[in-house]
Image (cartoon, rainbow, N blue to C red; front, top):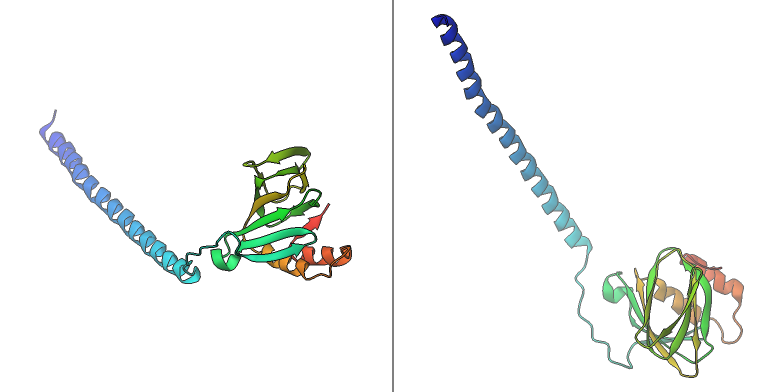
Length: 199
């Protein structure tokens, strides 16, 4: 090989090699800057979330404590409200006699978990009907019609968890209706405010 060509090609090769680390270093520097910016944005978001989410205080609710309501024949004891859980969920104990139930209805906003503690409950969700005994539970996602009725000869105790909170306000409004046969127009109007409808 010609000496001039060799020196020229070697110099170009070495120049390219010495330029490569500089390109890589600048890419790495840019990546680090992006990571630093992302970390700053995340830190700001965390501070904003901390400002908007208030601290939740612990709460002990004894067996017979809570807010007692009769909601169209459904005996409820509201144990935890959205005020207690920062709007995350509501917890309600239900104590009912055989024959008590709620007709098919749909929630647009809430999911429910219904767990039987004592007695038996017939649950219908979508097209399926099942009997829940003590210890059984059912998950009722929003948008799917469901209903329940206490069956058998024993009083039933159940725990109803509602995610997110808010329906306890509807139950309080319904409990203020006069006793006796419910005015279904008023019931539907109250329930409609909370995006719950009977089907």
